[in-house]
Length: 618
Image 1 (cartoon, one colour):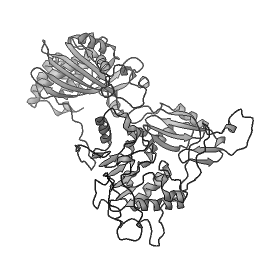
Image 2 (cartoon, rainbow, N blue to C red; image 1 turned 90 degrees about the horizontal axis):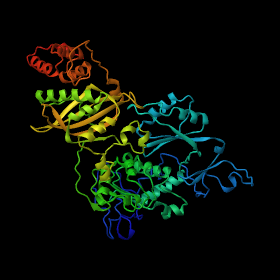
Image 3 (cartoon, rainbow, N blue to C red; image 1 turned 120 degrees about the horizontal axis):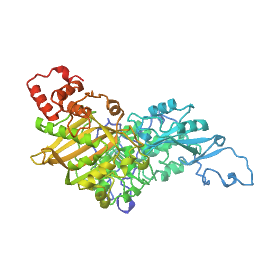
Image 4 (tube, rainbow, N blue to C red; image 1 turned 90 degrees about the vertical axis):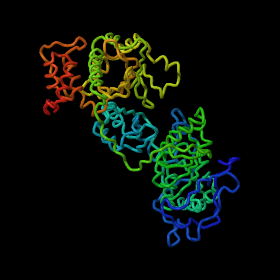
């Protein structure tokens, strides 16, 4: 925004229309078109073509869609959409046709909706689901057929309306009885509601006036369109067109005209239009794929989350000053970081040059390589770590975890974290038992709380672990990666699956990622100095594979002191050797259930090529 609240660029209506249509992406782009000063950009430049690009060969305006718009202004009815004489208890009886106030388009929609019972249905976190998939799931689970009216999303939630009380009741009854592909339960909330606002489309003549207005505001030399403070446009006022870009139909009409006539548009100014959300602009990256400069200044955008809806644009310059969202950042760096998270190629923000972005241009879809197995460095480290894990989780999954006191260093530290889901009440989460100890540094800003949630010293660490729910880990699911190693330090990460075996979440399957930092112990084993654990709900595929390969249990065999049973040792040897459970059982049994001796014999025979391939078939 230039000084004195003046526009970044102006329009010139001295010429008749748009210049010759250029190919997409062609033509010079001038990054400084919003520069300050009296000559913000060169006026004119519409080209020699006397015919407007908005007109067809007969001089008529070509319209692709028909719209309708009511000009009546918003009537200040009381809350609930009823006037004072319609409220209960009013002695003055009047006969009215049912009237609903459509706030989105400032008009009254007449009908008999007051005779219907409307209900608003809310799906928390429903935005992440495909609409057709979600509707099919609910229709199959619901005992009463229903028609979803005006399905839409806002932030993380999905909404729609039903006009049948029995359908509303049936939808409420299926809440948390359906699961998604990640095994999360789908919550369905219903409540009585006023009839939904159904905005009428714009009239043909109003679209024509809008088109003529956009023609006069277009600068062909800069490929820029100035739609600033559109409602005060003198031509629209003279033609009695009350056009507000905050209305869905008006915004869609403008974007459609852009797509039909100037898809190569490089710059768009829609400042001073009192926009408080950008839902209706979500298709702009398809309508104007070459757009590089967007001016949203002096609107009513209250959250940077609104920018998520237009992040498909590859913007190089963005103006947001004058919006309430600019006041919610503690410093300039946080502001820039939040905006650049949506537009990584941004070079200028509110007229200020930004440091060059570090980006990786991957235009074509990239398929991630398949996940590989464990990386354990060398065989010596492999034996050491897998022996440690077998012993550690035998105690951890037992009745008393006090035996872990010998595993931790006197000055050991431990922490736990779980994923944060926007808008979810932690107490109602399936991971609620872990939230009170969650040390998620992305969400915790208070250093005092951060320090309090970090368990320090061996007794505190083991005491904390003892309070966590009792578990059973699937050792066959473990993937172990050595991150760093030296003569005095070893850092490795364990990913795997476990299930809870008691309490309200009994049999719930979780996935975990645990980072251990250890030093050599006095007994030749490992002594933990740092233990950091991340726990989340397991996916449907992880649940399907979990505990799918139970190991056979020998009738009687000597078992090492730290093992609660041969089955745990067999699972650990399966993880170590890669052999199936039958051959792992045989190897351990032949070596007197001495894990370390069995491991050494296995490595020797494997190096000599004496282990048949059938041993590795699972």
